[in-house]
Image 1 (spheres, helix red, strand yellow):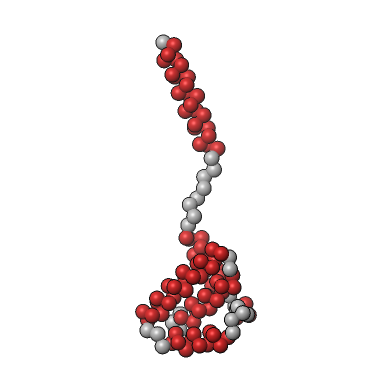
Image 2 (image 1 turned 90 degrees about the horizontal axis):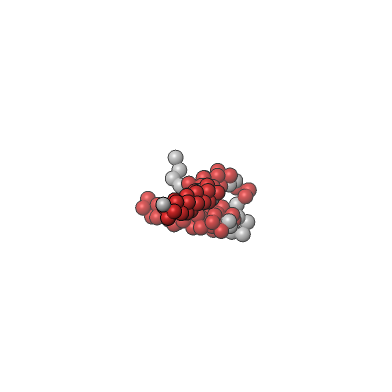
Length: 113
């Protein structure tokens, strides 16, 4: 009878201590790409011509605009995908001038309505 009581007490202490420690652990949300997509969307909306990267000459964008106009839809989509990935990496590094640079290139690739 004493052994059963000791086992019961030990189990109770062990399980109740475990339950209490679980209650104290904070719940952490998994990192989601949804938040990054929201940041990218906010950056896209907030970029104005006055905020463009001053380190890159305007002629670079004009030359890219000319080359991009000659690309087919498949080529533009591939290039857009690559630029979006690079922009995402720049956001992770918090290199906002690079984010804006890739956003400007993506805007050039967007089809005009």
